[in-house]
Length: 383
Ligand code: HEM
Image (cartoon, rainbow, N blue to C red):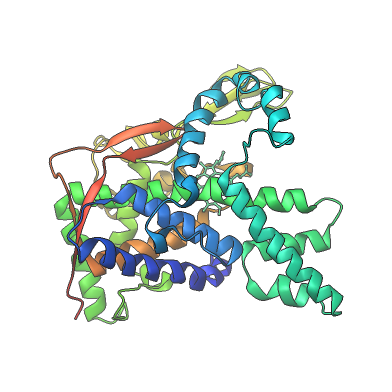
């Protein structure tokens, strides 16, 4: 995690903008906010900032620019069933006729996220060309200077040009937006939703935050911003985040693996090589023998009450980021974002559900998106 704190200034740029825009667009106008979507704007902009040192501009404009967010939502609604029956893809998106039309510019199937990524990459490549033309060492300047993910990918290209060609750099950059925006937004929405539905937990978290300010654990900044290292000294915040991850892991379908050729014994049963097996976080996170009989209840306290051994088992069974060789590579980036945004936001605003008696609706499009999560915000006094 320590190396990721280098991204904190990039996350801060978007977080502060998000807090200011929340105040301008919602709290000062007394408007109702579609919080799930608003958090997605934030997550998308953070990914843009971390990947290209340039946010997509959603938070600034307060709207879904080029329909990128909506498009991604639709894409996942397609990917979820097609991922279970991959041959369907040949009929639809990978249909040779559609590919032909796309290739010859007759119909475009290029995702707006890809268009944005291509534009950023071309800007950066042009910059590097200019540097090279002036005899400037690109590795030490354009590539190394920014410290964003695009510079890391371009550095990999400089080091291993045969493997890490431009196509791979672009794929990596686009993957960041595909894998890191909805997931982080869904997880953030879960943290807030459960707090709003469990007011005593919300009150306890606010006590922890206010006391941390009084005792100097958190610096009292006028914009409410909390640093990563300050957030790590807030045990109840940690419990609330973990409990939201437990009850609402972003990925809603089993994480699949292929059994090695020699077969494998799983839970006492021999599974032949080549079999696709999978395991869902929604099931594992609700195992009573691990998490307790009240698995369906949101109770952050379980993370504070557990003894060392139980806590280790609980943490070992949390697979919201997957597990093993293909575990999430963006885990620490999203944790940085979540542990900073939640306390910063709650310091600055008092949050309420627009319809306190209504539940949110869930849509499992590979990622389990929340719908009808509408809120109001009131400025808090931070003196
Ligand atoms: C709370 C936020 C996030 C959640 C819940 C999440 C969840 C996951 C899950 C469940 C997987 C599959 C792991 C497996 O099969 O074992 C995964 C993979 C991946 N994630 Fe995340 N993710 C999050 C944020 C991010 C971010 C911010 C990025 C990028 C900046 C990212 C990039 C990726 C990539 C590239 C993979 C594929 C890794 C591979 O196949 O080797 N994720 N993520």
